[in-house]
Length: 421
Figure (tube, rainbow, N blue to C red):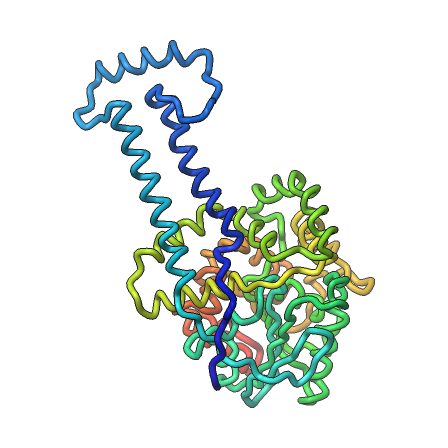
Protein backbone atom coordinates (compact mmCIF):
# COMPACT_ATOMS: atom_id res chain seq x y z
CA UNK A 1 0.00 0.00 0.00
CA UNK A 2 1.06 3.59 -0.47
CA UNK A 3 2.40 5.71 2.37
CA UNK A 4 0.90 8.92 3.65
CA UNK A 5 2.81 11.69 5.44
CA UNK A 6 2.10 11.35 9.12
CA UNK A 7 1.69 15.06 9.78
CA UNK A 8 2.30 18.39 8.06
CA UNK A 9 1.76 20.70 11.02
CA UNK A 10 4.74 21.66 13.19
CA UNK A 11 5.40 19.10 15.88
CA UNK A 12 4.22 20.09 19.34
CA UNK A 13 5.64 17.20 21.31
CA UNK A 14 6.51 15.90 23.67
CA UNK A 15 3.08 17.09 24.76
CA UNK A 16 2.50 19.08 26.83
CA UNK A 17 6.01 20.44 26.26
CA UNK A 18 5.82 23.22 28.91
CA UNK A 19 5.03 20.59 31.55
CA UNK A 20 8.01 18.42 30.61
CA UNK A 21 10.31 21.46 30.56
CA UNK A 22 8.98 22.40 34.00
CA UNK A 23 9.69 18.88 35.30
CA UNK A 24 13.28 19.08 34.07
CA UNK A 25 13.65 22.50 35.71
CA UNK A 26 12.08 21.22 38.91
CA UNK A 27 14.60 18.36 39.09
CA UNK A 28 17.40 20.94 38.77
CA UNK A 29 15.88 23.05 41.53
CA UNK A 30 15.64 20.01 43.79
CA UNK A 31 19.31 19.28 43.16
CA UNK A 32 20.25 22.73 44.37
CA UNK A 33 17.86 22.48 47.29
CA UNK A 34 19.69 19.34 48.38
CA UNK A 35 22.86 21.37 48.69
CA UNK A 36 21.33 23.33 51.55
CA UNK A 37 21.69 20.49 54.02
CA UNK A 38 24.75 18.89 52.47
CA UNK A 39 26.96 21.99 52.27
CA UNK A 40 25.23 24.90 53.95
CA UNK A 41 25.13 26.77 50.63
CA UNK A 42 21.71 28.30 50.08
CA UNK A 43 20.00 27.91 46.72
CA UNK A 44 19.40 31.06 44.67
CA UNK A 45 15.88 31.58 46.04
CA UNK A 46 14.55 32.45 49.47
CA UNK A 47 13.95 29.34 51.47
CA UNK A 48 13.20 28.84 55.19
CA UNK A 49 16.24 27.53 57.03
CA UNK A 50 15.56 25.00 59.82
CA UNK A 51 16.30 26.48 63.23
CA UNK A 52 18.61 23.59 64.02
CA UNK A 53 20.69 24.01 60.86
CA UNK A 54 23.36 26.31 62.40
CA UNK A 55 23.98 23.68 65.09
CA UNK A 56 23.97 20.75 62.68
CA UNK A 57 26.43 22.15 60.15
CA UNK A 58 29.43 22.61 62.49
CA UNK A 59 28.89 19.10 63.82
CA UNK A 60 28.72 17.67 60.30
CA UNK A 61 31.85 19.59 59.26
CA UNK A 62 33.71 18.39 62.33
CA UNK A 63 32.76 14.80 61.63
CA UNK A 64 33.85 15.12 58.02
CA UNK A 65 37.22 16.50 59.12
CA UNK A 66 37.73 13.67 61.60
CA UNK A 67 36.95 11.18 58.80
CA UNK A 68 38.54 12.85 55.78
CA UNK A 69 37.56 11.69 52.32
CA UNK A 70 40.40 12.12 49.82
CA UNK A 71 38.11 12.89 46.90
CA UNK A 72 35.57 15.01 48.76
CA UNK A 73 34.55 18.30 47.16
CA UNK A 74 34.38 21.52 49.11
CA UNK A 75 31.01 23.32 49.02
CA UNK A 76 31.99 25.70 46.21
CA UNK A 77 33.20 22.81 44.05
CA UNK A 78 30.01 20.89 44.80
CA UNK A 79 27.81 23.77 43.71
CA UNK A 80 29.83 24.19 40.52
CA UNK A 81 29.62 20.47 39.75
CA UNK A 82 25.87 20.32 40.32
CA UNK A 83 25.33 23.42 38.17
CA UNK A 84 27.38 21.93 35.33
CA UNK A 85 25.53 18.60 35.52
CA UNK A 86 22.15 20.36 35.59
CA UNK A 87 23.08 22.49 32.59
CA UNK A 88 24.27 19.46 30.62
CA UNK A 89 21.11 17.57 31.53
CA UNK A 90 18.80 20.34 30.35
CA UNK A 91 20.80 20.96 27.18
CA UNK A 92 20.70 17.26 26.31
CA UNK A 93 16.93 17.20 26.77
CA UNK A 94 16.44 20.24 24.57
CA UNK A 95 18.75 18.81 21.89
CA UNK A 96 16.53 15.74 21.79
CA UNK A 97 13.40 17.88 21.50
CA UNK A 98 14.94 20.06 18.78
CA UNK A 99 16.06 16.98 16.86
CA UNK A 100 12.55 15.55 17.04
CA UNK A 101 10.97 18.82 15.90
CA UNK A 102 13.22 18.99 12.83
CA UNK A 103 13.14 15.28 11.91
CA UNK A 104 11.65 14.39 8.51
CA UNK A 105 7.95 13.52 8.65
CA UNK A 106 7.36 9.90 9.51
CA UNK A 107 5.30 7.85 7.09
CA UNK A 108 2.26 5.85 8.02
CA UNK A 109 0.60 3.17 5.99
CA UNK A 110 -2.58 4.11 4.17
CA UNK A 111 -5.66 3.16 6.12
CA UNK A 112 -7.90 0.59 4.44
CA UNK A 113 -11.34 1.71 3.41
CA UNK A 114 -14.20 1.26 5.85
CA UNK A 115 -16.69 -1.56 5.36
CA UNK A 116 -19.03 -0.18 8.03
CA UNK A 117 -19.35 3.05 9.98
CA UNK A 118 -21.28 4.59 12.81
CA UNK A 119 -20.77 8.27 13.54
CA UNK A 120 -17.03 8.92 13.40
CA UNK A 121 -16.14 5.26 13.99
CA UNK A 122 -15.02 3.11 11.06
CA UNK A 123 -14.64 -0.65 10.74
CA UNK A 124 -11.62 -1.14 8.47
CA UNK A 125 -10.83 -4.41 6.71
CA UNK A 126 -7.13 -5.31 6.60
CA UNK A 127 -7.59 -8.40 4.47
CA UNK A 128 -7.05 -12.04 5.19
CA UNK A 129 -9.20 -15.11 4.97
CA UNK A 130 -10.51 -17.34 7.68
CA UNK A 131 -12.35 -16.60 10.89
CA UNK A 132 -13.21 -12.91 11.38
CA UNK A 133 -11.40 -11.01 14.14
CA UNK A 134 -12.16 -7.48 15.32
CA UNK A 135 -9.53 -5.44 17.16
CA UNK A 136 -10.64 -2.72 19.57
CA UNK A 137 -7.92 -0.20 20.48
CA UNK A 138 -7.97 2.40 23.22
CA UNK A 139 -10.03 5.55 22.82
CA UNK A 140 -7.24 7.72 24.24
CA UNK A 141 -4.84 7.52 21.29
CA UNK A 142 -5.35 6.91 17.59
CA UNK A 143 -5.41 3.34 16.35
CA UNK A 144 -2.27 3.90 14.23
CA UNK A 145 -0.07 2.11 16.78
CA UNK A 146 -1.64 -1.16 15.58
CA UNK A 147 -0.44 -0.44 12.03
CA UNK A 148 2.71 1.58 12.66
CA UNK A 149 4.84 0.47 9.71
CA UNK A 150 5.18 -2.35 7.18
CA UNK A 151 7.42 -4.34 9.52
CA UNK A 152 5.64 -3.36 12.75
CA UNK A 153 1.97 -3.90 12.01
CA UNK A 154 -0.12 -5.95 14.41
CA UNK A 155 -3.10 -5.70 12.05
CA UNK A 156 -1.28 -6.89 8.93
CA UNK A 157 0.33 -9.75 10.82
CA UNK A 158 -3.13 -10.95 11.85
CA UNK A 159 -4.32 -10.67 8.25
CA UNK A 160 -1.47 -12.83 6.95
CA UNK A 161 -1.99 -15.30 9.79
CA UNK A 162 -5.17 -16.90 8.47
CA UNK A 163 -7.69 -14.42 9.90
CA UNK A 164 -10.13 -12.01 8.23
CA UNK A 165 -8.92 -8.95 10.11
CA UNK A 166 -10.89 -5.83 11.04
CA UNK A 167 -9.98 -2.75 13.07
CA UNK A 168 -12.60 -0.74 14.92
CA UNK A 169 -11.13 2.73 14.39
CA UNK A 170 -12.90 5.01 16.89
CA UNK A 171 -11.31 8.23 15.57
CA UNK A 172 -11.90 11.49 17.48
CA UNK A 173 -15.30 12.10 19.05
CA UNK A 174 -17.67 14.03 16.79
CA UNK A 175 -20.78 15.97 17.72
CA UNK A 176 -22.62 12.79 18.69
CA UNK A 177 -19.75 11.02 20.45
CA UNK A 178 -18.96 14.05 22.61
CA UNK A 179 -21.88 12.93 24.78
CA UNK A 180 -20.81 9.28 24.95
CA UNK A 181 -19.92 7.34 28.07
CA UNK A 182 -18.56 3.79 27.89
CA UNK A 183 -22.04 2.27 27.56
CA UNK A 184 -22.74 4.40 24.49
CA UNK A 185 -19.55 3.32 22.74
CA UNK A 186 -20.39 -0.30 23.48
CA UNK A 187 -24.09 -0.26 22.60
CA UNK A 188 -23.93 2.18 19.68
CA UNK A 189 -20.61 1.18 18.09
CA UNK A 190 -18.87 -1.99 19.32
CA UNK A 191 -21.83 -4.36 19.42
CA UNK A 192 -23.30 -3.15 16.09
CA UNK A 193 -19.86 -3.61 14.50
CA UNK A 194 -19.72 -7.19 15.79
CA UNK A 195 -23.26 -7.75 14.52
CA UNK A 196 -22.18 -6.52 11.10
CA UNK A 197 -19.31 -9.03 11.05
CA UNK A 198 -21.68 -11.82 12.10
CA UNK A 199 -23.95 -10.97 9.18
CA UNK A 200 -21.01 -10.60 6.80
CA UNK A 201 -19.29 -13.88 7.69
CA UNK A 202 -22.12 -15.94 9.14
CA UNK A 203 -20.17 -16.71 12.34
CA UNK A 204 -19.25 -14.93 15.56
CA UNK A 205 -16.03 -12.97 15.43
CA UNK A 206 -13.00 -13.23 17.64
CA UNK A 207 -12.59 -10.03 19.68
CA UNK A 208 -9.22 -8.54 20.65
CA UNK A 209 -9.07 -5.56 22.99
CA UNK A 210 -5.89 -3.55 23.55
CA UNK A 211 -5.42 -1.29 26.58
CA UNK A 212 -8.68 0.57 27.31
CA UNK A 213 -10.14 -1.27 24.33
CA UNK A 214 -9.68 -4.46 26.31
CA UNK A 215 -11.63 -3.09 29.25
CA UNK A 216 -14.43 -2.12 26.87
CA UNK A 217 -14.25 -5.49 25.09
CA UNK A 218 -15.34 -7.28 28.24
CA UNK A 219 -18.82 -5.78 27.84
CA UNK A 220 -19.75 -7.25 24.42
CA UNK A 221 -18.42 -10.62 25.60
CA UNK A 222 -20.88 -10.44 28.52
CA UNK A 223 -23.84 -8.77 26.82
CA UNK A 224 -23.71 -10.54 23.43
CA UNK A 225 -21.98 -13.85 23.87
CA UNK A 226 -23.49 -14.93 20.53
CA UNK A 227 -21.29 -12.37 18.73
CA UNK A 228 -17.94 -13.20 20.37
CA UNK A 229 -16.19 -16.47 19.55
CA UNK A 230 -12.96 -15.89 21.46
CA UNK A 231 -11.77 -13.00 23.57
CA UNK A 232 -8.18 -11.74 23.87
CA UNK A 233 -7.27 -8.91 26.25
CA UNK A 234 -3.88 -7.27 25.68
CA UNK A 235 -2.49 -5.03 28.44
CA UNK A 236 -6.07 -4.29 29.46
CA UNK A 237 -6.71 -2.73 32.88
CA UNK A 238 -9.39 -4.31 35.03
CA UNK A 239 -8.55 -3.80 38.70
CA UNK A 240 -7.87 -0.05 38.61
CA UNK A 241 -6.72 0.00 42.23
CA UNK A 242 -3.93 -2.51 41.68
CA UNK A 243 -0.54 -0.83 42.19
CA UNK A 244 -2.02 2.63 41.65
CA UNK A 245 -1.97 4.15 45.13
CA UNK A 246 0.00 7.19 43.99
CA UNK A 247 -2.40 8.08 41.20
CA UNK A 248 -5.44 7.46 43.39
CA UNK A 249 -4.04 9.78 46.06
CA UNK A 250 -3.69 12.56 43.50
CA UNK A 251 -7.10 12.21 41.83
CA UNK A 252 -9.13 13.85 44.64
CA UNK A 253 -6.70 16.77 44.60
CA UNK A 254 -6.95 17.10 40.82
CA UNK A 255 -10.71 16.51 40.50
CA UNK A 256 -11.81 20.17 40.89
CA UNK A 257 -9.56 21.38 38.07
CA UNK A 258 -10.32 18.32 35.93
CA UNK A 259 -14.04 19.02 36.35
CA UNK A 260 -13.54 22.63 35.25
CA UNK A 261 -11.48 21.72 32.17
CA UNK A 262 -13.73 18.86 31.03
CA UNK A 263 -16.84 20.95 31.71
CA UNK A 264 -15.54 23.92 29.75
CA UNK A 265 -14.33 21.86 26.77
CA UNK A 266 -16.96 19.14 26.79
CA UNK A 267 -14.05 16.70 26.52
CA UNK A 268 -10.68 15.87 28.03
CA UNK A 269 -8.17 17.62 25.72
CA UNK A 270 -5.10 15.79 24.42
CA UNK A 271 -2.67 17.85 26.50
CA UNK A 272 -4.64 17.12 29.66
CA UNK A 273 -4.55 13.39 28.96
CA UNK A 274 -0.82 13.50 28.26
CA UNK A 275 -0.25 15.41 31.49
CA UNK A 276 -2.12 12.73 33.43
CA UNK A 277 -0.01 10.00 31.81
CA UNK A 278 3.08 11.97 32.82
CA UNK A 279 2.04 11.57 36.47
CA UNK A 280 2.71 7.83 36.14
CA UNK A 281 6.43 8.45 35.48
CA UNK A 282 7.28 12.18 35.51
CA UNK A 283 10.90 11.69 34.41
CA UNK A 284 10.20 9.28 31.53
CA UNK A 285 10.00 11.93 28.79
CA UNK A 286 13.26 13.53 29.89
CA UNK A 287 15.02 10.17 29.83
CA UNK A 288 13.61 9.33 26.39
CA UNK A 289 14.62 12.58 24.74
CA UNK A 290 18.10 12.67 26.28
CA UNK A 291 18.58 9.18 24.88
CA UNK A 292 17.25 10.31 21.49
CA UNK A 293 19.69 13.25 21.48
CA UNK A 294 22.58 10.75 21.53
CA UNK A 295 20.99 8.19 19.19
CA UNK A 296 22.75 7.61 15.84
CA UNK A 297 20.82 8.16 12.64
CA UNK A 298 19.12 5.01 11.45
CA UNK A 299 16.09 2.79 11.95
CA UNK A 300 15.98 3.21 15.72
CA UNK A 301 15.86 6.98 15.38
CA UNK A 302 13.17 6.75 12.70
CA UNK A 303 11.08 4.47 14.89
CA UNK A 304 11.47 6.86 17.82
CA UNK A 305 10.08 9.67 15.66
CA UNK A 306 7.21 7.49 14.40
CA UNK A 307 6.22 6.49 17.94
CA UNK A 308 6.41 10.07 19.20
CA UNK A 309 4.34 11.27 16.26
CA UNK A 310 1.69 8.75 17.24
CA UNK A 311 1.82 9.70 20.92
CA UNK A 312 1.57 13.41 20.17
CA UNK A 313 -1.12 13.07 17.51
CA UNK A 314 -3.69 12.00 20.06
CA UNK A 315 -7.42 12.54 20.22
CA UNK A 316 -9.52 14.07 23.00
CA UNK A 317 -11.73 11.90 25.15
CA UNK A 318 -15.47 12.50 25.23
CA UNK A 319 -16.43 14.35 28.42
CA UNK A 320 -18.75 11.70 29.94
CA UNK A 321 -16.27 8.92 29.20
CA UNK A 322 -13.40 10.98 30.64
CA UNK A 323 -15.30 11.56 33.89
CA UNK A 324 -16.28 7.90 34.05
CA UNK A 325 -12.75 6.67 33.42
CA UNK A 326 -11.11 9.04 35.87
CA UNK A 327 -13.56 9.11 38.74
CA UNK A 328 -15.49 5.82 38.45
CA UNK A 329 -12.88 3.47 37.01
CA UNK A 330 -9.68 4.83 38.54
CA UNK A 331 -11.34 6.54 41.47
CA UNK A 332 -13.94 3.99 42.58
CA UNK A 333 -12.64 0.91 40.70
CA UNK A 334 -16.13 0.04 39.46
CA UNK A 335 -14.90 -2.62 36.96
CA UNK A 336 -12.66 -4.35 39.48
CA UNK A 337 -15.41 -4.33 42.12
CA UNK A 338 -18.03 -5.69 39.73
CA UNK A 339 -20.02 -2.44 39.76
CA UNK A 340 -19.57 -1.30 36.15
CA UNK A 341 -22.91 -1.56 34.37
CA UNK A 342 -23.82 -1.32 30.70
CA UNK A 343 -27.41 -1.36 29.51
CA UNK A 344 -28.60 -2.30 32.98
CA UNK A 345 -26.30 -5.32 33.36
CA UNK A 346 -23.19 -5.52 35.49
CA UNK A 347 -20.13 -6.44 33.47
CA UNK A 348 -18.91 -9.28 35.63
CA UNK A 349 -16.00 -11.28 34.19
CA UNK A 350 -17.52 -14.52 35.52
CA UNK A 351 -20.26 -14.08 32.89
CA UNK A 352 -17.78 -14.33 29.99
CA UNK A 353 -18.40 -17.59 28.13
CA UNK A 354 -15.94 -17.24 25.25
CA UNK A 355 -12.50 -18.85 25.56
CA UNK A 356 -10.32 -16.03 26.85
CA UNK A 357 -6.63 -15.19 26.71
CA UNK A 358 -5.14 -12.39 28.82
CA UNK A 359 -1.71 -11.05 27.83
CA UNK A 360 0.00 -9.09 30.59
CA UNK A 361 3.31 -7.30 29.85
CA UNK A 362 5.48 -7.32 32.96
CA UNK A 363 7.26 -4.07 32.03
CA UNK A 364 4.06 -2.08 31.48
CA UNK A 365 4.27 1.46 32.93
CA UNK A 366 0.78 2.46 31.77
CA UNK A 367 -1.30 -0.50 32.97
CA UNK A 368 0.15 -2.13 36.11
CA UNK A 369 0.60 -5.86 35.42
CA UNK A 370 -1.49 -6.67 38.49
CA UNK A 371 -4.38 -4.69 36.99
CA UNK A 372 -4.27 -6.71 33.76
CA UNK A 373 -3.79 -10.03 35.56
CA UNK A 374 -6.94 -9.35 37.58
CA UNK A 375 -9.07 -10.02 34.50
CA UNK A 376 -7.51 -13.46 34.10
CA UNK A 377 -8.26 -14.26 37.73
CA UNK A 378 -11.84 -13.03 37.46
CA UNK A 379 -12.72 -15.03 34.31
CA UNK A 380 -12.88 -18.64 35.56
CA UNK A 381 -11.62 -20.27 32.34
CA UNK A 382 -9.20 -17.54 31.21
CA UNK A 383 -5.60 -18.28 30.34
CA UNK A 384 -2.86 -15.86 31.32
CA UNK A 385 0.23 -15.21 29.21
CA UNK A 386 2.85 -12.99 30.83
CA UNK A 387 5.52 -11.48 28.58
CA UNK A 388 8.61 -9.44 29.40
CA UNK A 389 7.61 -6.44 27.29
CA UNK A 390 6.14 -2.97 27.79
CA UNK A 391 2.74 -1.51 27.05
CA UNK A 392 3.63 -0.42 23.52
CA UNK A 393 6.24 -3.14 23.05
CA UNK A 394 3.65 -5.91 22.93
CA UNK A 395 2.12 -4.26 19.86
CA UNK A 396 4.92 -2.42 18.07
CA UNK A 397 8.16 -3.64 19.63
CA UNK A 398 10.87 -5.68 17.93
CA UNK A 399 9.85 -8.81 19.84
CA UNK A 400 6.08 -8.33 19.48
CA UNK A 401 5.58 -10.56 16.43
CA UNK A 402 7.33 -13.60 17.87
CA UNK A 403 6.38 -13.14 21.50
CA UNK A 404 2.77 -11.94 21.28
CA UNK A 405 1.27 -11.81 17.78
CA UNK A 406 2.17 -15.24 16.43
CA UNK A 407 1.19 -17.12 19.62
CA UNK A 408 -2.06 -15.14 19.61
CA UNK A 409 -2.72 -16.09 15.97
CA UNK A 410 -2.07 -19.75 16.80
CA UNK A 411 -4.49 -19.55 19.72
CA UNK A 412 -7.21 -17.88 17.65
CA UNK A 413 -6.81 -20.44 14.86
CA UNK A 414 -6.88 -23.46 17.16
CA UNK A 415 -9.69 -25.82 16.16
CA UNK A 416 -9.99 -27.68 19.43
CA UNK A 417 -10.17 -26.51 23.02
CA UNK A 418 -7.59 -23.72 23.18
CA UNK A 419 -4.32 -24.40 24.90
CA UNK A 420 -2.12 -21.78 26.48
CA UNK A 421 0.20 -20.44 23.73
